[in-house]
Image (tube, rainbow, N blue to C red; front, side, top):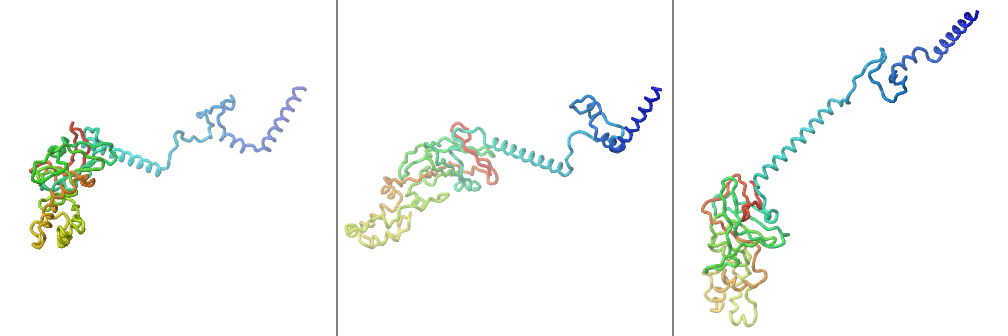
Length: 329
């Protein structure tokens, strides 16, 4: 009797359980729970880790691993990486080429520069030249006599000579090492000097251009002839008024050797011959603070052109053969 009663109670409970299960969602809710169930073993153990290998028979398996970007973004990224690599390669190759062209750096690197090579393509050595300069912020003059210029293409090497600080015509001039002051520069010509020596420009050297050819031409910056005589009563009596008219008609940096009017007074004629010339200009002005220029004319004395007319690498080397600067064209 007791057994029968217990079975009836159990059957009643089962019916009640089935009724409640159907009433709370039944089979569909169980299906949804099974699809999102994180892992039976984790649930049973209460573990915090995820067991990805376990799944119910009806659950679909999805691939795992790194996220996959869309094909378009991947191609763009590869292209960017390729372009970056090619740019780095070109920069590295350029740096290697520059280092090979430059050679062993000199302690004077960055202080003395090659600033112009516009006439390196000239075939006439008298017209072929380059320009070098001292930076304006160097703290002391730099002696460049004994340095050299070398063609990396031909291997020709020419040495920078000494020069005359204040040149005089018709005498033996004393040369000295070329000192480049801060901001000064040197025009280095491949050929022979028109006046026989390298020299420093001054406010009178424009007179030399009248009888000799310089490349590039010397500045036409001589004192204006009309300003050489003050118009005072004493000078008018000494030189005559026609002397002042004539001086005002003479072009700058010109010696009027054969164009002196016959009506000029002997004193005026002597003044013109003594002062309107290179040596006369130097004698009158060399004590002035503005007499010397900041440019040297340097001549390497070559009988043939030194630099290639098409492409070359020209190095400026110090006395130890180390590279001060280089230019490529």
